[in-house]
Length: 139
Image (cartoon, rainbow, N blue to C red; front, side, top):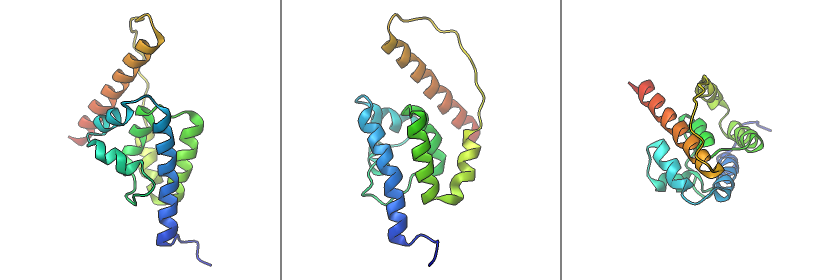
């Protein structure tokens, strides 16, 4: 018996990690798909494709790290997603490891008086830093 995934088998493997992404998006506030599209520099229809297990289009490895960051995956969600992604695309793991390299910068920010506003500011700054870093990497 071969350990290679059949085309139907690879479709099932792709659908598995897409289902995890879909579930994560469904649990987030409205507007998350649009924010993710903007962070990736894509149309909202691209997010629909990559989050729908019925579509065979795989998620490009270069977007995986940004997706997990923008969607605020929990540790459990992240582990499940990466495990399923690796099963579907074992050779892409090296690309993911390269993207996970990073460094931490701590900023002092004003307290905006509500947890929701503080979280929104933190998210906006994180997304901004990710976009700028990607622009610099691409030049």
